[in-house]
Amino acid sequence: MSWAASRAGSGGPRGGLRVAVVDYGAGNLVSIEQGLTFVGADVRIARTPGDLEDAEAVIVPGVGAAAPAMRRLARAGLVDPLLRWIALGKPYLGICLGLQLLFDGSDEDGAATFGVIPGRTVLLEDAPTLPHIGWNQVERRHEHALFAGLADGTDLYFVHSYAGRPDGAGADAITLAETEHGRRFVSAVDRGNVLGVQFHPERSGGAGIRLLGNFARWATALTAGAGAERSPVGAGGTAGSD
Amino acid sequence: MLRRRVIPCLDVANGRVVKGTRFVDLVDEGDPPELAARYADEGADEIVFLDITAAPEGRRTLLDVVERTARRAFIPLTVGGGVRTVRDMRDVLRAGADKVSLNTAAVADPSLVSRCAARFGRQAVVVAIDARRVAGAAPDAADPRWEVLVRGGRDTTTLEAVEWAVRAAELGAGELLVTSIDRDGTQSGYDTALLRAITSRVTVPVIASGGAAAPSDFVAAVRDGGADAVLAASIFHRRIHAIADVKRALQAAGIPVRATQGVAA
Image 1 (cartoon, rainbow over the protein chains, first blue to last red):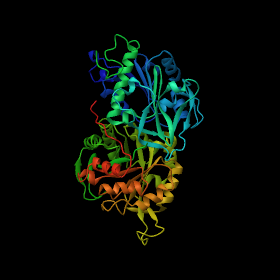
Image 2: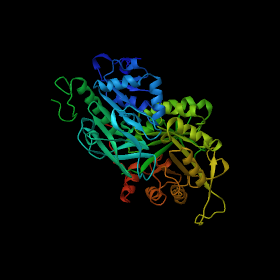
Image 3: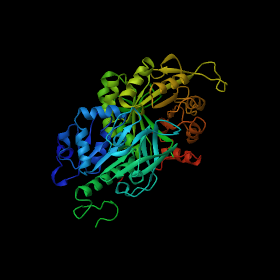
């Protein structure tokens, strides 16, 4: 399957970041594809391991429960390639269920998931309403290029009942942002080349689009060598170009 | 803290936004993606499309409209009207909707709610309930009851609205869109007693619909009715009030709303 920009005849010199968006039948991919295209990325919807091969960044979106998602990913032969991708240190973003899959397992249906981040996906505690649907404040625990140009506490769109809870010694370092609904839960994680967000940037208006652009810049910098000399844009995005 | 949402509703017939009392005197109001994008810019927290043609031949048109809208407005999109099967729901989600609203088909076959929730997650399943006060019950009756109507308010059922709301949530609805048929199109305010009767019995979010006229009506739906989101059509379409006016009123009443940020990156 070709890259979107090539399909549109605008590939080549434009050279947007090649982002593979993994499709395993878990809902709407139109918005994420459109959002990434809007910020200049070349998007491919990836359904087979081969679709990941010349990608520069991978996004695993998705809503719903973990067990059917894991089944579909396994059936498509995508679990091992995704784990390899992560192990190779390449840029990776999990959105909503895509974030939850990074943990060891899910309480929602007992599914074993990727085990990339220690901890489990658990039901939101003391939530006044479930599912947690709507715009809520995302409060950073540390700074990251992903949030460049966004005020701390920016409202982003959520739609979920479960969230991943990092566990063990590295939990604090991995927690990138938190949000409160009843109690606080982890709404973004950062483990080197792996980022995960519980909210939906592709459905979060201008703030979400900015975040997708930040992801593309961060991934470009990471691909170019840990944000070093070759990176055309600073990983901070707004930190001044040159 | 979770924000209360303000949601414009677009009634769509044959691929165009129409206005009028839901099903009669329809006036062409424009291209759905165009209007959705305008509302997104003006601070809408979500968009709801109700396909009121819902004739089999209109499905392709609707899916096209959904996709064009999803490509224009980067806010959540709920689509209702004519979804009768898990496959229908899949098609609408695949076209770019985030949630699908079930109404008549869910009343006819409640297992549809469970099957859709099992396949796509409950967060994607909205059950829309059209409710009418049972005749004879005074507006201030101590124990009001509401009956569920289907087919756009044309047919009565034997279901009681609050009981159906509770059951729908148990079956797997992740959200309820509650419309007062008595108030719809009357601009006499939401039926806050109906809303409160439902919000006090379920933990899923409830969207208030039917009767909005003034910004204070939206405040009442949240404060008195316990609604998590407030929906309106004509007052936004006719530019009687802007979404920002409604949000200002909510904020002034101490109700948290989203501060809007433009799409310009």
